[in-house]
Image (cartoon, rainbow, N blue to C red):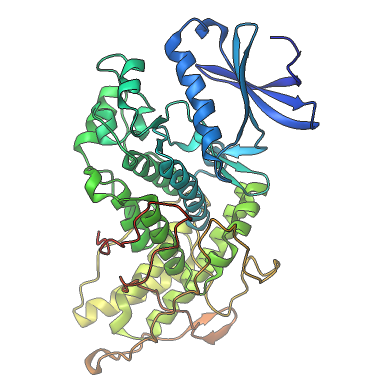
Length: 472
């Protein structure tokens, strides 16, 4: 391939895979940088690879969504097939995991929502991606999330053409991220993308895949027959996030979210329960841009904020007496997950365990494995404590017309007084330099199934019937 062809200059190599090589290019007519993907010359005589390469270009170009990498051009030059795409300057989620070990849940939910919007647009066009994984999700330096690589995508009605491109008994996709039906070689629909997105979400939150194996056969057997380790024991997440991921990873497609629209609704519910003040809903794209600028630094900043947040919540529940002892214990255990040497959490937990023993109360089992994690987990900033995003404007971020408007955050009910027989106060603690009890918003539980789904795009055939709430 020459250094210049059909209005493009090739500036340098960006990377290479088993099927193609990616180059940095310049579109001379508009003087803008682009990414040019070229099929390896050795595959130019293989009709299967040529068909898949062509399908990737036509599929992605037909979607046209801000969360999908856009395709500018496609063609062949000197027997080399090429795709010209927008250049996403940033990193993929695989790179992000390498830098942080594990990604904070606020950032994961924001990424998950953006990917879901992109895949919703694909599904509405009848396109199934079939290869969702961290390396195919890009985060630009500006905090924009883009889904890439539609090389394995297919039209949901194009089963006969897919069969012609696939050897009998063969399976397409990346093994660790395949859905059970995909791993078994069965027909798949849009819900296979929901499962694969669930695998990616699990990995971003914990730093490890839900299924492991030395061979494809071992991984395939686990995907089809075994449940993944409980997310709540791998990362300090809310019950709502754990239920969200568990439903995405359901073996039976009928037990997953029926559409991306339903998934998006649940993601936003998780954002509200993670941060009842509404800060996460309002600033989620600011989280993405800050994370993109400095993944380890912002993750550590969130971790420190999380420690303070959980300490305040723990002391708040502790002063309410035995009625809230399980909640207090859970908060202090979360702190020890993030900071095993935290003296305040250790001391408070010892006091609570002693009080429970004296009162004959059996504490709930530990929710998470108390082992030092990568510095990247956070929880909402409690009311009254400065937010790490207080330096940004407080106006609600604007959304494109295709997106539903942000809803006002839900508020939890005021804490109820403890029963008469469980009113023992376990003691106020010194918080932020003063003897006080931090007034922290109580967790929000979504109990209103009548709340409408986010508005679908004009012309969308997506149903607006909300499924019954999922219980893990």
